[in-house]
Amino acid sequence: MLTLVVFVMLLSSAAVMVYVERKVAAMLQQRVGPYLVGPRGLLQPLADVIKLMFKEELRPLAADRFLFALAPIISATAAFSAFAVVPFGAETTFFGLLDTPMRLQVSDVNVAILVVFAIASMSVYGVVLAGWSSNSKYSLLGGLRASAQMISYELSYGLALASVLVMANSLSLTGIVNHQAGTWLGFIPRWFVFIQPVGFLVYMTAGIAETNRAPFDFPEAEQELVAGYHTEYSSMSFAMFFLAEYINMVTVSAVATDLFLGGWHGPFLPESLGWIWFLAKVSAILFFYVWMRWTLPRYRYDQLMAFGWKVLLPIAAVNLLATAAGVLYFGL
Amino acid sequence: MGSDLLFYIFGAVAVGASLAVIGQRNPIYSVLLLILSFGALSGLYILLDAPFVAVIQIIVYAGAIMVLFLFVVMLLNAPHEETDYDERVHPLLRAGPTRFGVVLAIGLIAELWWALTKGRETGPFGDGSVSSVAAIGRSLFTEYSFQFEVTSVLILVAMVGAVVLARREPKSEGRP
Amino acid sequence: MSGLVPTPALSHYLILSAVLFTIGAAGVFVRRNIITVLLSIEIMLNAVNLTFVAVGRYRGTVDGQIITFFVMTVAAAEAAVGLAIVIGLFRHKESLNPDSFTALKW
Image 1 (cartoon, rainbow over the protein chains, first blue to last red):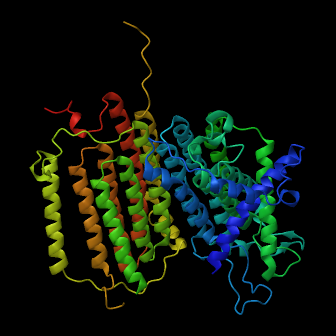
Image 2: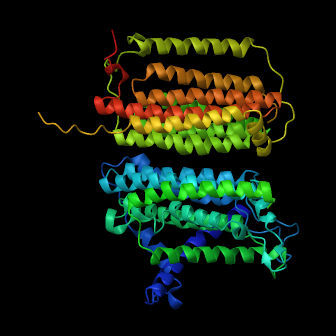
Image 3: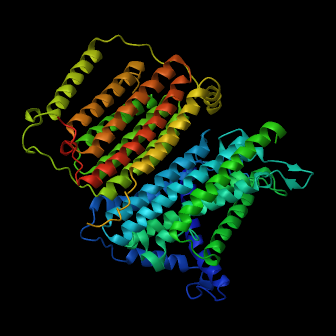
């Protein structure tokens, strides 16, 4: 039952993100954005979905049929499954509607962080198979570059996760969030972002690179590679890649909120309404994502790889070392 | 009860996928089937109360090593294998290692049949809890710390070796 | 349902891993494509991992999982170096058939 709710939530969040992206982009570029469809353009995502459903489904003649069909399935499945272990609220009865409190997490495993990481590493296959099976040079190059970028930034992602682990002493996401309850001095919340700002920045950077968003979206840059690995896809398969990208963004933001921003803990609301705070924090990070895309210029591919290996990875490693030293000697 | 059935399902998927890996012609399908087999093995590890190893299996094997294999297959563009022998000849009649391989396989299957029917049944698993990552970490860094450090040197050596071995030789300057 | 299939005991896991090992070993000899040979070696290593974890669980220690950790690391290193060698070989002679590399044969 909760699974269905989470699934529908993720789908609608993707739809909302489509609208938000275009409106925020318009705001940053000082224009209006979608305004024709529905009041203030609010039905624009619906129009997009209908258009995508009615487009013709094409397949290049020389494409490998099975892999061509499998690649968007892998991308979308990995994107949805990663959210299964992310908790988004404390135990709640939804204003007294339910009899027993329901935990707001689809499955509580005690290695939750590693499961998120594992599913993120499986989403590489969707990209690389899409590039290969399309049998076109733009797709192949885009696919190989995108997957090489994703596996390079996974290392910094993992090290940023590890520094949070060292501080929270637990791999379970619920445990990490509960470690951040309470405040210092009565008003500064005990979020990890205040103790680990470098870790948070490394995590966000690696997360943006993992989801192939600007400024790291060279593999799907329109000016360079047509559309990269999803050049040859149309209609619903393209929609699945699109969907997978937005849901990956939501998952990275949700995990960042759980790890660094205190999850569902907030000042004024009681624990059982914590999911409102969670929603607010995730929305803030998603706004940051969209803002980054339309503000910063794109990294060139070799600059991107050099940054990932030569700058971000040493910073993440030193951060882990410093965190471990801090926990050991200062008992943080 | 449900987990008993899961063992047989995962086992069947692992064995079936592995058979398909060695039987499949196209190397890309082989790699993808092996990833499926690793997924089934990961499920078996969870049944054995080892969630950490299960997740590490996905992260390291299915998520990193297989990506490496996939890259190499794509870069070398190796669609099918060319064989020296005639494909229509039965495997047992082919010369050389193939014959040995098939004989070895038959011998091992016979041995397994013997083990299934005659071997001593071991007792069931004791009641164990899901092993905690903390226990693994503690043991890894105290009892096995030397092996851990040696493994890090091994990885360094492998990295340097892989980069050097796959490097393109610079073209020599002098022209004939 | 409970009487339909026997509860898996240690011997079931050991037999499963022996079957996987056999498949891997047969693959090394039967296939004439270097990459498939390397994949069969990975199957064998996984079978060994399964044995370690199963026996570790049977004895109630965590050592089985730790050894698995090391086996995985060694497998990763070996796959990396092996594939680098394959790339070097392919550059020299455009073939992935191990039978075609006969320079060191007497």
